[in-house]
Length: 315
Image (cartoon, rainbow, N blue to C red; front, side):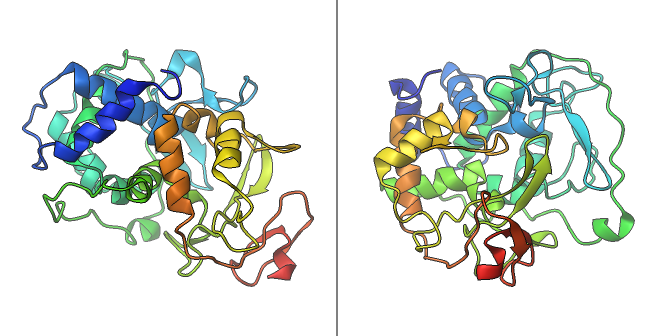
């Protein structure tokens, strides 16, 4: 799928008139749902960034290893966190899970085996997607070729497990309001988890008042980096115009700086031009938040977010 193609954009518009009710199970497989789900999973919700081993030596770095797309992985954070195999393999993946179980996991955080999913899985955000988009994601996930990949079980500390609970059923049957670029951009940004990475954490939640203000620290093969402040405050990106935003999201380069590969621009570049513009339109509506962070500067303690990052001492 290439950037700016017409079909995904038409499908975005078609969701305005979709049936808002919870889909019937099993979900009917249609070509429209398959293609809409393909677009969402690969360009917006970027499910495979978590549910795959990633190639940090590839070009661009950070895409799934081709032989294991959707096959899950395990990582230390510092406890063992296992991100499941969501391919159609029936023994080690999601092939034996029902559509209803997948829908419940996406909207309530309840796994196929009844356990509450760790909130690293963004079910609190996905539950706000339209019923039709959720159905489309499930239809596409069902089409992923099976990959046998037997994974261990997560080892989440018991005291941490007591801090999160499954969510109640979705509260409303009303479809999302996508009537303006800004509102559609808000919908896409929520689905893409922009606020998750660009808001500093506090326990299992986020620090109130620092939404989209950056300062979330990621460490890995890419080094140690802090996410950027995306608000229009002078410490954020007020100098961005639409042209610059599109260039950065499509190339992973901001002037002479390359974005760290943990920033999944290599997925978001495949969004349609209209959707990319809508996300930018939404970012321009954010409340300005003063929070300096710069990965080219030495890390210093920040009183606002509690992390160490470039320009932290200036906050």
